[in-house]
Length: 491
Image 1 (cartoon, rainbow, N blue to C red):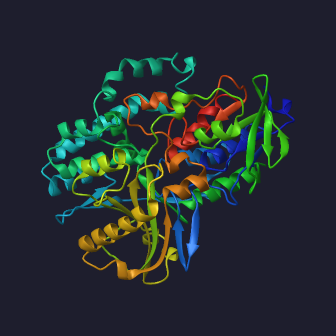
Image 2 (cartoon, one colour; image 1 turned 45 degrees about the vertical axis):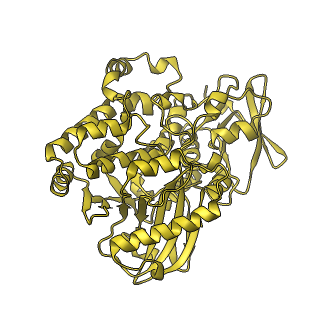
Image 3 (cartoon, helix red, strand yellow; image 1 turned 120 degrees about the vertical axis):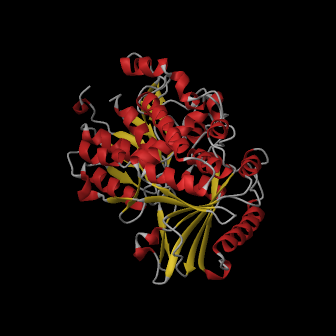
């Protein structure tokens, strides 16, 4: 149907990255799009703040698959670099182990294989074989599982999909990620290195299917990047593009209800005002969309009861001093990785020896910290919020993290902290409407979790669509952007 048939706007609920991407795609097709956001700023988790001269990206800190961002500019007939620039990282991450081993994850696969062979008991060949397997999983799955709805028959009725279905056995869905990695590698250091990729979508490598071994390929083959101006530049540039296309943003505008009549969406209620709409796209966590916005509808209990992904505890520290051995991305491994995940998933608490992720954007953008200082974004994986005593857990974790970093970096880190802010699952839940503060919606810990995510539409309400990390194909920036691409096919 031509867009001109719709005098009523298309409404997007939530200006997270998927909501902005959906708005851009529909504006390109000629739809009149209005975005309503409860917060005073766009970006959802992809947000920033400044504290005493230190700038911090508040949420996601790893940028991969920039082609999905560039694609939005190209669709609009714009040159991406007029809006947004980024540089490719030669070294993706620095890894630190308690025994003093330090490993650089080079972007170049051959260099990475050499590095692992040099620093562990595993061979160059075993790493190359593993990365080839990772590529195969990607080749089989990406155009079916990531770029199409799994919930529409026509997704399956083409040659590409048929080929993928026939190769289903090769995607390694029947054993866990750790089982595959234990078979493949001798050295526990290498296993931890590759098991960590499960955390990219808030899952547990000892439970999640080995299909998730697709993730190293996304990082190695497509690369990791640093956006000029930090991660928040992704949000800024896409909001600018959306506005250039005529999208209207309304901030501090909380949608209270999605309105529908006789199985057809009719609009939304914003702070008591009814705004009529031809289509509504919810970028709000699907759990809250059902519980808070859709009155009188049968709840998809099976989906809403699924295990949630893990959450994060983040310390934003302004650090007095420069650490030459640190890079943009750094990982300090726990010694007993399996115990750490058991503590998170089974006991729903934080291990006393957590794996620490440390991001320092001032390594690439000196303006992010005052001279002679660094902006440390220090994160540990934690369980979703089910009512734990977070104040106590945060205080304990803070001590354990400082102890660990001080031990490995051989400096008293605690004495160098001049600025501190904390983000925990409670605040993640309240500020981004992410149920239980989970970062990626549901976890991928079940064999068929990918198929059990909520679809991007709902049969009982025509004209209502869902995007973002809590629905298909999943969490993280690339997949959230792909959720917008999937619904674009319906317009």
